[in-house]
Length: 219
Image 1: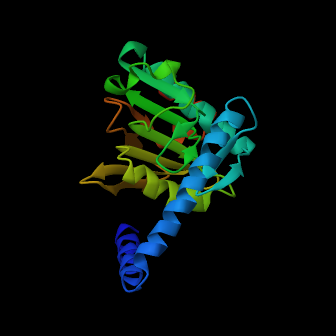
Image 2: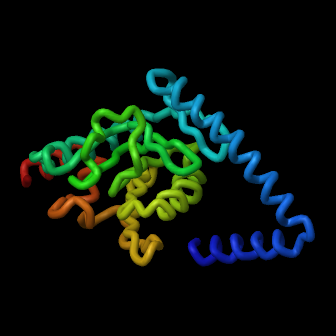
């Protein structure tokens, strides 16, 4: 996808530069983006304690979760909470508002290394983390696999997991030279985090209660 996206972006820039009024087009785009930033600011104010939603490319997108998404989130949260004992050196948070250059997302799970944790608890909206987990739902395939993928990559989030409860699979991406490399896509075996050192779990532990309890006992 990275190569396709790069080509699309280069083609779009080339088409823009072919226009004699390119500067006027860019000025119009900047005006639209400034208006969008006002909408984003209002979104922050109205959604800190309101309905769960995300701000994506100028639109407010409501968030809903299925029972299978919630179950996977709970299983993974258990494992992470048990593994990350010393919270003084890191920050693990669930379902928080995270600000990006243009958008605001609510990832299912975020992990921050020590260097990013300073003053983070006092912020109503968090900065991009080191590690993100997103759990797929019926309506989030495009946002998680394309829009968020590109945004997380652009903002240098080092590790990104996409968990699919329906097919009981996980995709693991690791940022290398400013691009995501697919490390793993599987429904079996183990997955080991690059960011959370030593965190290695059976993939089945994210989808099965008995496997989850067994993995907890191994920490």
